[in-house]
Length: 403
Image 1 (tube, rainbow, N blue to C red):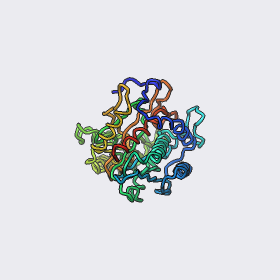
Image 2 (image 1 turned 135 degrees about the vertical axis):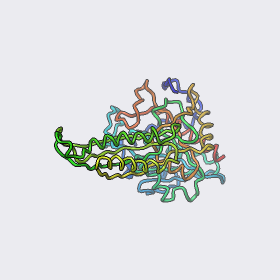
Image 3 (image 1 turned 90 degrees about the vertical axis):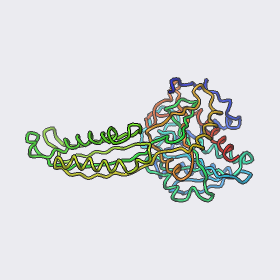
Image 4 (image 1 turned 30 degrees about the vertical axis):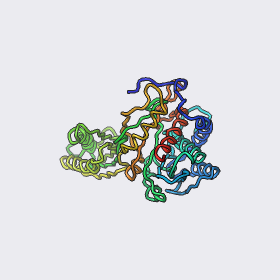
């Protein structure tokens, strides 16, 4: 468990090569330009144009308009070899920024509150370095700039439009700047890293009436309360206790007055798990439990249950590759953090279902500089020292994978 957070001065940058260190001011500038102009999923027009302009300037072959705003750049080494993809997401969140910084969001109600501006800057820096050093690797690198990670599944749309073909991608890597880890660390593990996420909306239909005459009603609030409790038993009594799973009821709305028994109640929430064999199970149990509770009270229901993202599962060999590279790059006492799972979800999972790969966390928190607010917080920000580290790790992965 990480208990200490290194400060800027304590992070050893000696393993970042001089040519990548010299890119650091440019990486920061790109990231801050993107941060000022956040765009929501499938609306990343300015972001896409910014990336395309850089790629064109550097003479990097690329395609635009994939899954509306996505871009794929192709960088060939000087010798034939394997094809490795590097993925970065571009979209922002519908959050009003509260940071008092010169580069704060210029778009009302929109903010890069999850680090995707940093992901894009790291990918741009990687593309620039690789195109300048084609002699250092064989094969081909495909840089995937992906739209709409935040709940819209842009990865799936890009795959459906053939982003992993022509040439055929053999493996893929990606990173997430991670304020749950300190600057100077990398979180990487084999197998499940992030959870599958499924969502639901459910409406309970009862019979309203006077609060003093409950015998004349079917109380949708009472029914809903029992359903909330019943759904928790899926994790407590149906899922193997050695497996991790979470059922969260995030919304519950009912009633219009204190003395009126509500005829309708609405609830929604999410389900998360790591084991892909549980796919389909929770939806089935939701239906059974909700139907049973409603039948016992004379209520009815309408349930809408759907799958969003599968779990992020890293390939053993690709995780070993990233781990070996990260071990060389980060030299703090903490270094590489192996147990870094989270119940958060990511649509990188669709890429990892299609080809072997590794998704990893790049520590970016620095409390000493007031850069430790959590992801999706209106004051989220990160230590930009991580940008150069991200480029170094990606470049070394390319050199090691492609030879």
